[in-house]
Image 1 (tube, one colour):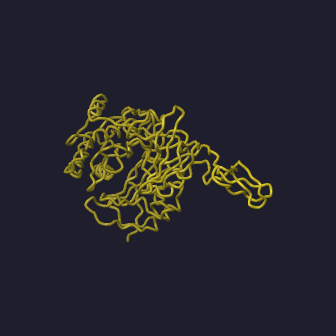
Image 2 (cartoon, one colour):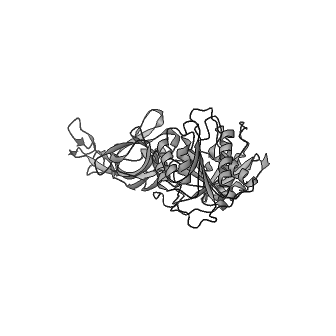
Image 3 (spheres, rainbow, N blue to C red):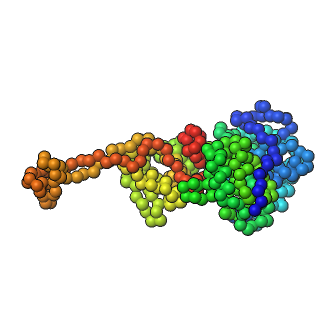
Length: 435
């Protein structure tokens, strides 16, 4: 085991949020966007971005920022996290040439679903394209038109689907920004990763809540170390470069081949759309408010569901699947009449829950036999005959209503880190329902 403190090789700054070129450090800086270079057998677009930045620096060029833009998590053709990257550099056409060379060298072009795209522009492109890519869908033809209209240089491989993500990376504009420090092994290494489990729990302990989702404390699971055959050894997410670097300083692992620090939209709820139930479209992610209209039911496999009704009379099923673990107990505690705001993806006519806010609770009651004037609880006198006191013989046709204490409180609840999506904002971050 080798102790490593990853040292980012870049100087970072935030681009302007409105997507224009105001305040840029140098007017000759270019943006290079890349997407769709990986497959289920290996590789990783963020790894290719890290290698590109390293090669640009080795060639004497300046690299001023690296951006990781997570796009629609419901995309049909995504490999894992649907990430595109953008590198800001002064390398110009040489940078584009190096990027294309890396794609040809490393992208898994043998995979049917790997269709890379590389695009370059002189300045950030209009942000509407990114916003649509993170909340909805775009076609390859739309990417062509967008890149042409904005004077971008681009190249695609095979069906060129990666140009959608590359264009989205060039237009990425984050109203909320987080950071991820990624440590990589060499892309040809496929064995088990050598990472000390307890050192990651220590890193989380020492830096939480400024970093998050490195581990799942309740389920005792390490989250930041993948099990897929890609080059990532681990990834630390947090509020600033300083905090993710501090967390990484506690981690004991095999020596990384390369490290990178990306500014990201992870943990920001950028994918959520505020909408009424009746306006929802398949494979988008929503935030909507309504009233629980059915008792939660546990189905095959441990999945829990209930129906949500909004003010317009539209209804939708909400699902908490088995992988969300204890979050299902929160869902089971709901009753008809509770008012909630739910967040999640709309798939197959259901909302797959990522988190929930219990706005108000309905009263829960139980029916019991009445208490006699002598103090003893009555019992049934027979079908349709009311109740009778076995002590004194008094009878009553009325039953008793008892208010039952709820096992859930108003507030916000989320799935555990082991089940959280990249884009979903954890409760530890302020403004849960503000994207």
